[in-house]
Image 1: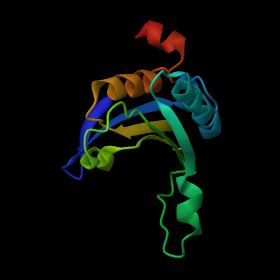
Image 2 (image 1 turned 90 degrees about the vertical axis):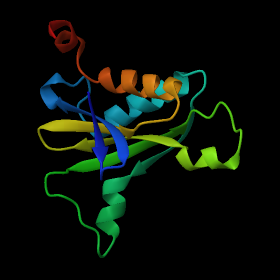
Image 3 (image 1 turned 30 degrees about the vertical axis):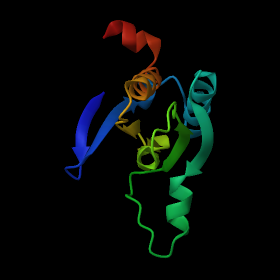
Length: 136
């Protein structure tokens, strides 16, 4: 898993998984797995799934990189406290899943809450087949 700054201000975690090393065959199967992770978590609340590719494709001015075959998000919230209205700016969370033909790219924005980051990171890392994890 790699952490980068997108546009020099957004801390993003990204994992690229070659399809032959992934436990799931397509974006929908990955989203089902992630939905199950959210629903099994004692704090997280599932909100929605969003088909980013379909949305952007439907826009007259929509542009999608040619190597992106599918792109969807699972959207959820870890909000354990609501101390002021400002924290709503960093909620909800999402994990994006893109099919790049030969690999899947999973990404999420760093959360200001370790509980959320730890959960999202473990869910995403679990996408790599167990045989590959044992060999690493």
